[in-house]
Length: 164
Image (tube, rainbow, N blue to C red):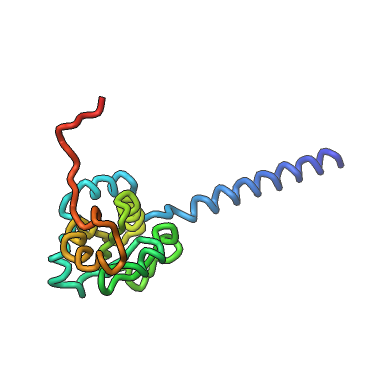
């Protein structure tokens, strides 16, 4: 009798482990494209869309501002939808999944990470050249949001200085 109980316990345990393994296998890959492929795509300079190209054909893109809501209220490109970077996975709109997403933010690292996430989810994403935005649009609005004088100009790093 005791042997029968221990055998039943072992069989129940094996069935439970098998069910867990099968559930993990059936779920599949959460992302559609591997990280290596997304990394290769991110190195492609054709993924950067200049602002003047966006102005010519804005209907070709789903424009997304990755800034937080406060910054979005202060300034954004016309027709942009605000999806903060931190909420990106929760707020991906699958009705626009097959449209080209054009993303921008004041933080380039967030933009790069967001592009990788979107590409892994199977959404074709492009960078909007933020330097172009600063030159073409932000300068027009700089006095309206009260930025300092130094933010009106585009600064370039000194390439003669090398890290030690």
